[in-house]
Image 1 (cartoon, rainbow, N blue to C red):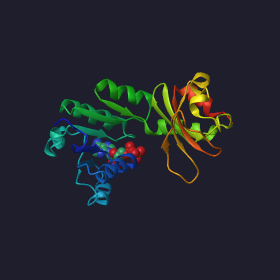
Image 2 (image 1 turned 180 degrees about the horizontal axis):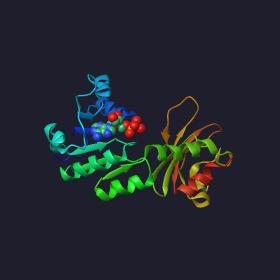
Image 3 (image 1 turned 45 degrees about the horizontal axis):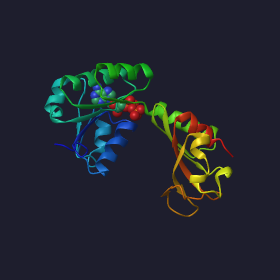
Image 4 (image 1 turned 45 degrees about the vertical axis):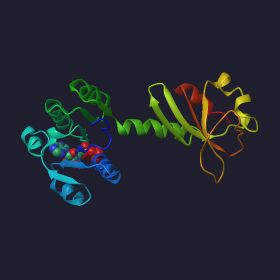
Length: 220
Ligand code: ADP
């Protein structure tokens, strides 16, 4: 199949992260096989998820019986039990699942998961902590690190850039960033162009190298 985006997904571990993920996948129309070894959590989610089972994901036979090897994509959402997270991930590699996403609770945990063959490793607590730090310490309304050195920031239009078309503001030359979208009070976001003129109170989305957008977002 060319487009894998709507393929069914196995979600292993239904703690706060795994259950939110599984429910959101279902909401978006993706079929989900959810697995957890705690009967109580499975019971509370049954009826909301396509297929849900109580099983120990460190048992390869249990995974085979549930048909896990037929899936293209799996998410290991076990965090606090690092041993179970590593074992489960290695079994998914052994079962030749093509696309394995794994949640890590520390940098070391993330490194191990990558080394044993997880295709994508996410660190939700760490990433969210960084994101909130940007909002708490500055004027940013939102911050998204899209690559190690590239970020998107939602912030208020700095006063020096109000009233001049963006194309004439010298924004890229002076700050090395691009304003990609603008939202005037009470309106929707629209794309920004060279002709866009910002007003006081406009909310903007700025993209560029992380340090540069951070510096730009500090402007009054
Ligand atoms: P969160 O921080 O997102 O709540 P946790 O690490 O606390 O994540 O939750 C992980 C979930 O994974 C728990 O519901 C737990 O029962 C489940 N789990 C842990 N080990 C296994 C295992 N070997 N097999 C299946 N599920 C497991």
